[in-house]
Amino acid sequence: MTAPLLSLYRRLSRWPGGRWLFTRAVCLKAPYFASISPRVTLLEPGRCEGRLADRRKVRNHIGTVHAIALCNLAELTAGLMVDASLPADMRWIPKGMEVRYQAKARGTLQAVASPERPIASAPGGYDLPVRVVVSDAAGTEVFTARIAMWVSPRHAKG
Image (cartoon, rainbow, N blue to C red; front, side, top):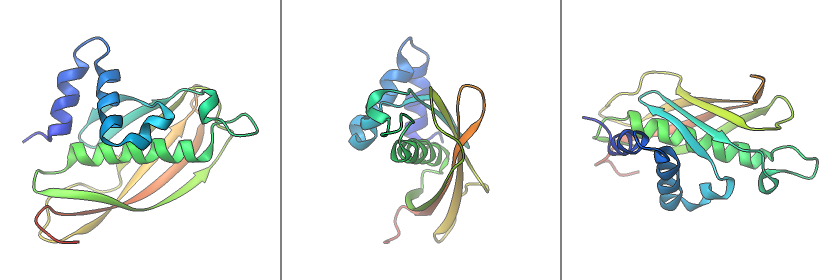
């Protein structure tokens, strides 16, 4: 069975402006992500790609994309990827994030989120590490994140 989020993405992305509309819907559900004006460019089981335009509102005092904007993009793409990949009987929540700032982040940035191990149903909860790589237009990795997701059955407490 296809995750509802993935079904919505597939339905909307067939239309002009559909990915923009999908991203807006995600930002309505999780308003904090709207602060960076992201764009989801691909969503499929095991992979999510998102774009962040270099705008004044995401820059820091030295004129590069702010570290927290990069973290927001990483958390958004990782969360969407996990949500689109999970079996219907499972849920997720982020537990932590390790990040590395590798180069000055300038221009339009592209994030790619993918799991470090297979995503599956399990009788108990488990840690799922998700890797996110953010690159600039030249393909230079400017930021990487490893996000620890806690995946557990929907009926479980905690």
